[in-house]
Amino acid sequence: QKEVEQDPGPLSVPEGAIVSLNCTYSNSAFQYFMWYRQYSRKGPELLMYTYSSGNKEDGRFTAQVDKSSKYISLFIRDSQPSDSATYLCAMSPGNQFYFGTGTSLTVIP
Amino acid sequence: ETGVTQSPTHLIKTRGQQVTLRCSSQSGHNTVSWYQQALGQGPQFIFQYYREEENGRGNFPPRFSGLQFPNYSSELNVNALELDDSALYLCASSWTSGGANEQYFGPGTRLTVT
Picture 1 (tube, rainbow over the protein chains, first blue to last red):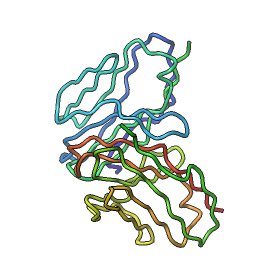
Picture 2: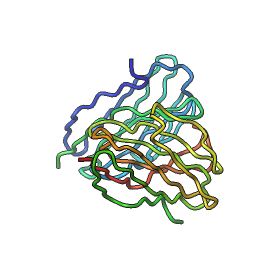
Picture 3: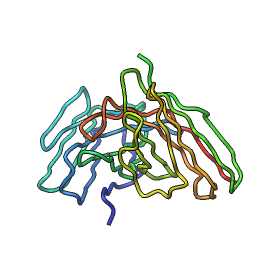
Picture 4: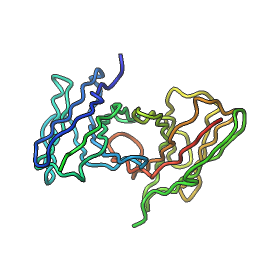
């Protein structure tokens, strides 16, 4: 079993839609959770960083962590064509980072 | 503020050769982590350097080695290259070691082994 599971998609939505991206994990020691956006052939760009359970909002992005279910989510409101990218979840118990495989998102104008 | 930079951008090597990849950390960061990202996969942790010492290592063989310099820049060395080493190699820097600190990635070096 992988440490972090993420549906690779691809996910295709119309412009303006709400996008929901999710990851599950098995290691209960994970306490730091991140979402990265990666455009084709580029390095990942940090979008959201959260510690422990709860919600965090930044503009059109909301990150949710449910440690009891070992489940994290990223919501994108009013999606734009420029949001088309691969979204990676990452998590850490305090040292090493573990990444999901990424979900490919396309926002259609 | 200067972001994380990596060189070279692309590299083609032959199986059995050795390669050195370079990374300059973001200003003010003292920790560098290296990742290997195969096509269609998430980044896999290779190792981390904190204050010039290796500070954690993933499931990679000893032919993957690294260095961190006093200015916190870093090198990744891979000996005896194999075809499966073809990947995007990413460097990430942070203020200090540990998952409690946000990591910022460079653009990566794309290595092709033929």
